[in-house]
Length: 159
Image 1 (cartoon, rainbow, N blue to C red):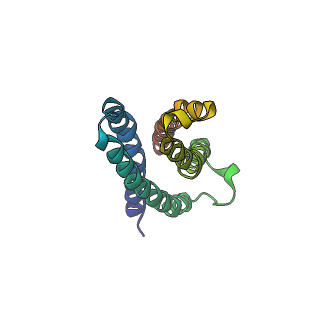
Image 2 (image 1 turned 90 degrees about the vertical axis):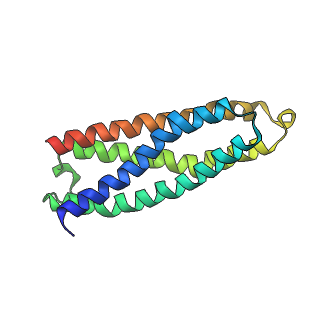
């Protein structure tokens, strides 16, 4: 596969993941909070988030396939990260953290939130209320981390 095609696929996957995160965080979530009392608001948010999850994991697969090929195409040894440029090591560390946050959100926090929201408010424990209050911070942190990945990617491209 040509270098151009690899970069293009890598960028499309990154745009899908990070652009979707920006949309969810800055458009959909605030709109949901503004309309939370409307019966269809929750269904719209859940449906959108579920569809976006497919985009994210599809993007992750593409990034995990194209990333190592791009490393090799630059002549950097794949299994000797100490010989990689600093921006690449930083970027991959940030991506690893972002991937862990995404896994935690999709496999732990998301199911827990759904279980809590299925309970009547008077049946929720104090810890449930804490989880609900803190739940919005993980996607916000992921957004900041995503933007940091983009920043370091530009540094890498310009080095």
